[in-house]
Amino acid sequence: MLTPGSLIKIMILLDTHTWIWSHSATKLLSDNAKKLIKKTLTNQRAIASISIWEFAMMMVKGRINVKIDPKLWLDNAIKNSGLKVIELSPEIALESCNLPSDFHKDPADQIIVATARIHNLTLLTKDRKILNYRHVNAFW
Image (tube, one colour):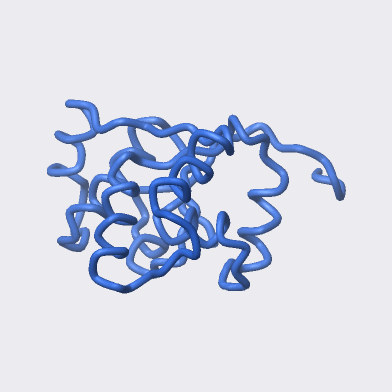
């Protein structure tokens, strides 16, 4: 049983929006997501490398705006935070193209889900399509 302040020993994978929101001190994270992030050590948190590309695309398209230089934001959100970046491996690439059942067609989400599956991670996401996908351990 978890007690307030106790740490848990699971590795979590932050979906792109979860990672951005958690680093931007936004109120968009659910209370459950905040608690899970807080109860894991920094080195127990990861993102898929595709999330960095998604961040860059969101910047280019004007979907997000950061108040500092995007490179500095990335340095803070990755290197300085101790967050692990899981690179796209051949195994993840193959898994992303062969996910069981019917999964939606967003390639970035396919890679993120495949990353969680290959590394047996709990995926922290608000994405309903992922939360409803029974072949990945997802939480919000």
